[in-house]
Length: 598
Image (tube, one colour):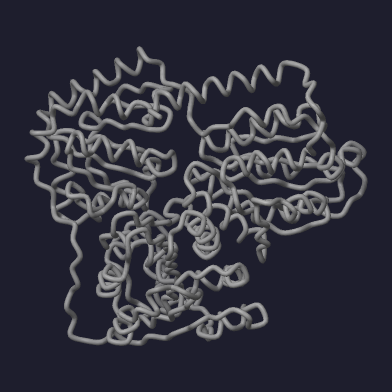
């Protein structure tokens, strides 16, 4: 089905749902509100629900546990559950992550992860089990409240971090509220908050609406405006004499535009580069792909190619500090065109409502005659290369290129804020590999919960290996989420970069301060400690030098990932990828601590 046909079909379904809402439902009342919600999630391919039980959601969790398609994961805390829902949604594009918590204490614990998903445009439905409708009105002195009768305070707390709130207070509009909430979540790629009172869960409603599918396809672009915008872009490319560079960013991934972008690149042959958050939006073995552009932190060859092009067409830009080399792009607006999910910017003119997913195929057709010119533009080779060092110390300069020879096509690679996020950037990843990172929000420990969700999604999609890179400091925040990984039979390979503290903080400020130190845990005991009565086979290793690491990576049994494995990698405390060192210097200057001493 073409993009246009998908958009038209989605629009017809939206109209059908609106008509269904307006008319009185006369269908058989044969499904509970809770099961209606679960059926909608299952229709969208959701197979896992994250969260913790609490007395205000237990009735709903009965339905979850009995559901044939949705597995209740059961996390160690709500923060980790929100991270896991985030990782799940990133891997399983076109659907959403789902977390269920209890009133007050549970939902507040999850807010940091929900805020991160909002920041990085990840669709998460947060279901909060709340007191009965009678209690919500009478406001008794209930547990999990502040004791002052403000039962709505948690709605206010979550408000800045979601695009929509649905509070189901009766069965009459429950189905319409659920449908609208989920649609907002998947079309806007942002979190949504839904409260489910205890006495609503088992009330019965009609199944009629369930025959009309929900869709993540955005409403169609206005055809006349879109045609005008395409003509404007064509004129700018013509003026640039076909000297065009494409720059891809995170929202290509978030809004499901990889396929359309790949076709655009093939038809036009324009050189393409990615930002850190856009890494793996384009297969990195593609012949016209040149690597990562990060402003002043960029390799000189790439920097010259991007910044000297006559025109840059940016897809899905997300211009955060760590994604742009501390806002150091040297690309003036007069040479820039930006395509986004819901608007297009051509130099100084902005066209709201013109989204890239539907426009890209027509833009490809308009620009494909530049293929011959574009093909002549040289692209720096983005190829694997292992530097030579005359010692056995595992440095970041050597470690990340060495890992490049370990990765397989379709690997899911999760990297933690700090050394891992920066170290992986210049490593060419094989076709079909997916990189999952949280560069904008940057909540340390996020990667561990995210790995759990990503591994569940990867299992659904038939992706065999999930690989996590996390520092010892970050892992101490969320280490307990390895426990449900083991319990659920997931088999990630976990590389713990042991450099005895918080590396990125050391480079930003306080290189020798004690507040950047941590206790040195016995990491090779973690899997056995968190194992479920020792019933699951696990394996742990410590590597202290280049030879030991290489021998392990070359071991086919290890590489096959048939069981969960943890590798403690011993690294110098004050070593870091050069991109991180330079970014930290810029961040430290921006923080302007004045006379503070290291």
